[in-house]
Amino acid sequence: MTREQDQAIAAKGRHIALVIAGTISLWVALSLFIGPMLGLPGRYALLFDFAALAGMIYALVNIFQLWRMRRDSQR
Image 1 (cartoon, rainbow, N blue to C red):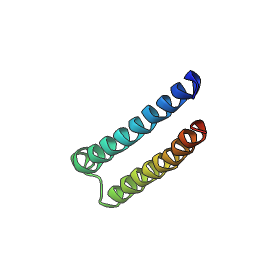
Image 2 (image 1 turned 180 degrees about the vertical axis):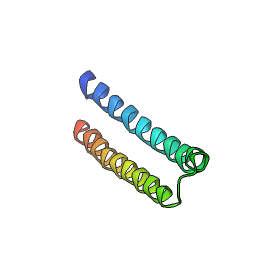
Image 3 (image 1 turned 30 degrees about the vertical axis):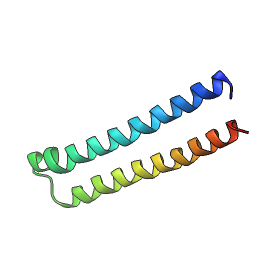
Image 4 (image 1 turned 135 degrees about the vertical axis):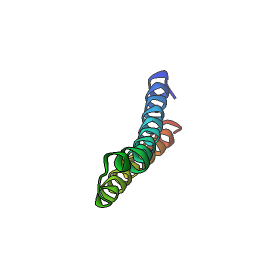
């Protein structure tokens, strides 16, 4: 494994971690605090849930890509 590959794998892992942490933090803040404070109807909670689901699917796709990068670099 070369140094460039190691750095690319580490950067992808950090990106995935930030996406997951940011998605969950934003989802909790919008659903539990900001939405009710602004008096948004309940249907917006469903919108926030779908947005969080999209963020998690994006993270899952990236995790699969990271797994393939690591597998290919070990050969």
